[in-house]
Image (tube, rainbow, N blue to C red; front, side, top):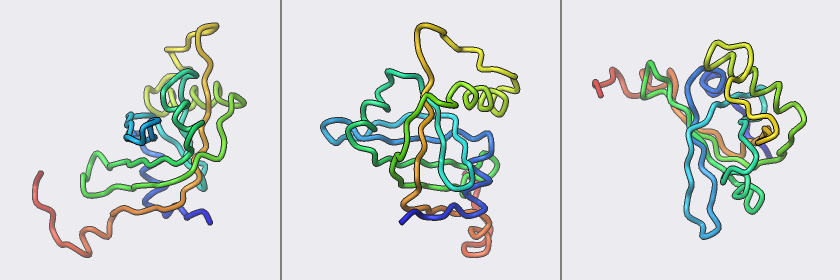
Length: 146
């Protein structure tokens, strides 16, 4: 059964913070990459170029993990363990343009390489969502500087 994204998780996934996504290599070792991230409110969405190691890893083992930290409060974060339920080229170009708007303030993705690489939209269904948001202050009191 899929886990629900709470409001803090949605807020962080919709922010301009990068996610660090972990996939599993053939030998079981973790491979981590910072990526642009998004959510539709239910699933986590990332967008990669075809041919990346992440896609090969996901094809072999769809389990992934990711985390996003609030840049204004390092103690506020969301961590998601989930399963890739879809990889598709359908809508991937429009999605990477939305990500370029979100992260770069540009109307279209400036690093597009037509004829060289295609974009792939990856849909991650959360199996477990954890983290700490405003609850940190309530549970732990004032934060020490990093």
